[in-house]
Length: 240
Image (cartoon, rainbow, N blue to C red; front, top):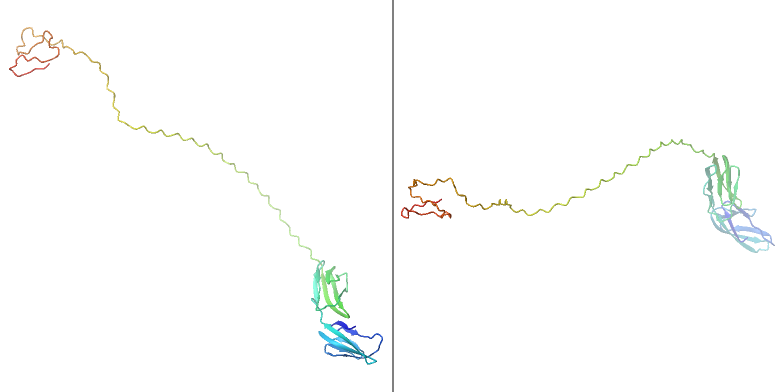
C-alpha cells in the first residue's frame, strides 16, 4: 500500500511483494511510530511518510494519515421501543456496528440503536482494529396513566325563544286641512212687509172737544201720515 488511513492507536503492517524488507522508518515518529518488529501505529492526528528499504537497497514510500474518531455518546438510556442515532465523528473509514446483546438493543448498519427489552448492553463501532464503545441501558416502557374521565353533565338545551309577532302599525288618519276662518253673522230673519195698521181705538172728537186745534183726518186723505199744520202761525207741529 502506498496510502493508508489509521485511527489513533490503530496498527498496520506493511509488506513488499517480490522483495524482502530490510528496514522501515517514519519521518514523524510522534505521529506514526514504527516498532522493531516493523509494526506501524498511529499516535496522534496527522500525517507521516513511511520509508521501506528492501534487501537490495531500493526504497519504497507510504503516506499514512492518522484520524482521531470518537462517538457522539459514550452512554445512553432508552425506554423499550425508543431509538437513538450514534455517530462516529472524525472518521472517514468504513464503520462496522456491533451489539453485544441484540435482545436488549440492536444497532443498524448506520448506527441507529433500537431498544428492545429491559436490560444493559454495549454497542461498538469498529474501524480497522479499533473499537469505540457506547453503554446502553434499556428501561421498561412506562404504562400511560389512565386518568378517569368525568362523566359530562348533560347540557340542557334551551327552549327556543318565541319571536314576538309585531303588532300592525295603525295607518295614520290624514289631518284635515283647516279652512280659513271668516266671521259669520246670523242671517236676519225675513220680515214680511205689513200694511200700516190704523188705530181704530183712537176716539173721534165728535163733540168738538179737540179744541186744541189738532187737525183730524176724517176723510183719510192724509194717509201718508204727513202732519197738517193747521196753524201756521203757531210754529208747532204734531206728528202722528
